[in-house]
Length: 519
Image 1 (cartoon, one colour):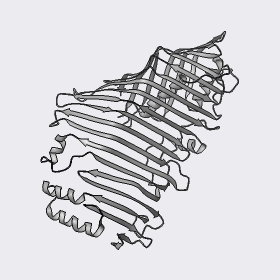
Image 2 (cartoon, rainbow, N blue to C red):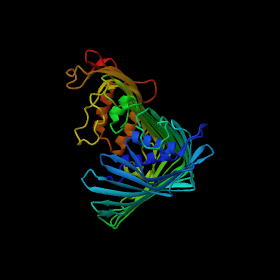
Image 3 (cartoon, rainbow, N blue to C red):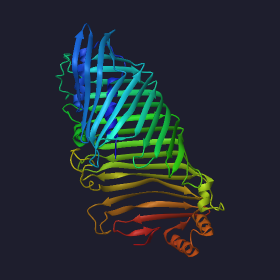
Image 4 (cartoon, one colour):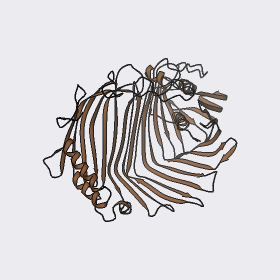
C-alpha cells in the first residue's frame, strides 16, 4: 500500500519552482511574475488559482492561492493563504506563508481511499524574481525548509505514521524562459503552449529525515532517522512549443520534451529500529559520499547512481550475532530506449560492487576453520548493445487499467564490455560480443540465432574447488567431474592455476569451445 506515491512527492517538488534563480538586467512586474507562474504550471497540466487579488503601487497581494495537481491515482492540492509580490529595485520580492498545507486524496492499488495531509514549512526565507516575462530568474535562500507528513487515513481509519524531511540552510537558483505571454496583464489568459525551459541549481548544508510508523496489526513500531551533508542538485526541463500536457510520457518525448537532473552528497548516516513484543532489531547505515544522475529525452532514459564507502551494521533478537557488511563502491547504470521508433536503439546496463566485505561471524557460518581466503569480493557486469522496442515501456494513458507487461525488446547486438567476479581467492573475467538474428528462431529453438564470441579467464579456480571439497561443500566426485569439464571447455593459461576459454557461435549455428565444436 503506497501512502506517499513517488509521483506525488515528485509533484510537490514543482512547488520549488516558486522559490529559486539568478539576477537578470531587465525589470519584471508582480503581475508578470504571477502570469508567468500560471502559464508555466498550466503547461505542466497543473492548475494555479487565487481566490482574491489586490494590486496597487507595485504590489500584488493574492489570497487563498491553490496549486492543484491531478494524477490517475488522485489529486494533490497545496494551499497558500496569502502570497505577496512587491517591486524592489527592478526585481520582485516574493513573500510566501511560513506554512503551506498540502492535501492528497486518492485510491490505492488495493482500492482503498487514502488521504494524506502534509505541511511545507520555511524559516528565514529570502525570495526574489528578476528578468522579463519570457526570461525570469529566481533566487531563494532560507534558514530551513521542511516537509512534514501530518496525518494519513485509509478508508477513514488513521495510520500512525509521522515523517519530517528538513533542509538546513538551503539556497537555490533557477531560470525559466518562455514562461510568460509578454503582455503582463496577470489575467491568467496565457496558453502555456509555447516552448519553455527551466534550469535550476541548489545546495543544502544538511538534510535530516525522521520517520516513525506503527504497524496497525500489532504493537510494533518502526523508526528511521537519517542525515546527509553537503547535498547539491541541478537539473533542467525542456518543453517544446505546442506541448500542453506531459502526462502522456510517450507523446511528450516524441514531441521533444527533455528532463535531466544530477545530485551529489557528502557523508550520510541512517539509523533504524524495529520494536514489538515478538521481535526487535536495530541497525545503522553510513556512507562517505553519493551521487546520481538521470536524463530523459529523445528515445532514451539514462540513469546512474553511485555510493562510496557504504557500511551496514544490524542486530536483532532473530540474529545470532551482529551482521556487518561494507562496500568500497557501488554503481548502478542504466541506458534504456523509451519510445517505439521502428529501429534498434542503444542500451546499456552497468553494475559494480567493489570491495564487498562481511564480518568474520558470517564467514564462520560456512567456513569455521578459515579455509577460504576472506579478501573483499568484487562483482562487475557491464553490458551494452542495440535493441528495438516493439511496444512502449509506458502506456500512453496512465489512467488505463493495468495490462500485460510490454513485449520484450528485440535485441540485435549485445556486448560484454566487462565481466569480473573475485571471491574467495578466485577471479573470473571476460569480454565478448554477439549479434542476434531475430528472423531465425529455429536454429536455437525459439531463441534468436546468435553470432559472436566471448573470451573468459579464470584464476585460482582449482584452488577454490579444492578448498570447497575440504570444507565438505562440494563432494569429491563432483569436483572430479568439474575438472573433466574444464578440460573440454578451457585451456591451461600461462600463469599458475589459470584457465582460458573462447566460446564461439558461428554463422552456421555451430558452438565452439577453443576451436572444438561442442554443438
